Every structure is written in structure tokens, then in C-alpha cells.
Image (cartoon, rainbow, N blue to C red; front, side):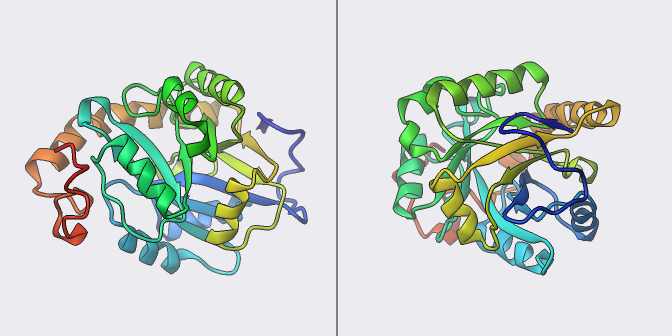
Length: 267
């Protein structure tokens, strides 16, 4: 185990009172994911699949939550145009927000809903908020991700520098697109967090936390597999979704949004 912020990790397998271990961003969720999370002594997962509307995410998160593992619904919203999109991870939304609306328009909507807005994998290729984006409006963000299992070491070091420069709290996640990556990185909060509202409050109140990751050959191999998947995910996988499969459920022109975001859409 490697602790990247705040002290030393307790012995693996020991649950400490007043702590909550959360993998703060996963894309996959089924019975095997839940089993893996529990085997890795996690207390919660934040589930934020791509191109899925909030009601569907909430339903699936509730289905896989139980007394020993909380699954928190969230959205990783793609803001801006495809070639210069900024991803933001949002927890605590009360109303659905589509992808591909303007960055500033999205931030305003998140603020209206009093949600916790996080900057995942900052400056990772063209899929993230930049250092300038975060520094220009640090009050809009509750935390910056400083370790992501899908990122290469130099990318995580750069993210850590952004958090230090902006003096924002931190978080870490597996960003698991594959089951085997769940629990490779997590955030350990110094409080008991039993609900989605508890997590939002902890993020917005700067509750103490530390980012912890696994180490060794298996961890590095899983990270490389996740990074390699990024090539498919951001090429043919997204081209198919954007242009060949019809209107996505999270496109701002989808009937579910009833035209509320027509003035903010970039497509």
C-alpha cells in the first residue's frame, strides 16, 4: 500500500472507527464488482458511467447498495465540444444535467443544485479540466483528483501539483472501466459517511481525507491495461456513440431534457 496524502494506512482488513474508504469513481457495477469492493475493505463506491442519465444511475446504484457497501450515484459530465471537452465529476445532483453543454453553463447548473463538483484526472490528454480551468475558479470545485489508476505516474504527479497550487482538497479513484481495477486506489475519509448526502457534505466541508493506492506489479499492470483502454474509449468507442448510434440519452437535445439546455448546447 502507498499513502499519497495524510499519514499511514491502517493494516489492510482492519476497519477503523470514524473512517470511510471510498473508491471515488468507477464505471462498472455488478455483483462481481460489489464482491471485489467488499473483499478490498471498501465502504463505498461512486458510480458514474458514461452517457447514462441520472435516474438510471440512481436506480442501479440503489440496486447494488446494501448494509456493508454504499453505492453513490454520480455523473461524469462531458462539457464543451468533443475536441476540447472538460470532464467534471458531480455528486449530489437532484436533476439530470446533459453532456456537451458549455463548461460555464454546467458549473452554474451544478451550483444551482448545490452539488459537489470534482476535477477528475486534471490535464489528462484532452478529456480534463486544465490547471488554468481549476485555478481560474477554485471555489467551483470541492476537490482535485491526485491519483487515478488510469493515469500514468507523471500525470498523477502533475495532478498533485495542481491540488497544491490551488490549495484544494484531494481525492483519488480507480476510475475502473474493468472489474479488476476496482479498489486499486481509494480515498479514506476521517468520518463515518453512510449516505450520498454525507459524502457531499464531507466534500464541501473539507473533511480530512487521504488518498491511498495499492502497489506492486499487479497494480502497475492493471493501471497500464486501463490506460491502454483509453485509446479505444476516446476513438472508435466514442465516435460510434456520438455519430453512429443516434441521440445519446445524455445529449442536450434528448427529449428527456425538454429543451432546458438548448441555449447551452455545443452541438
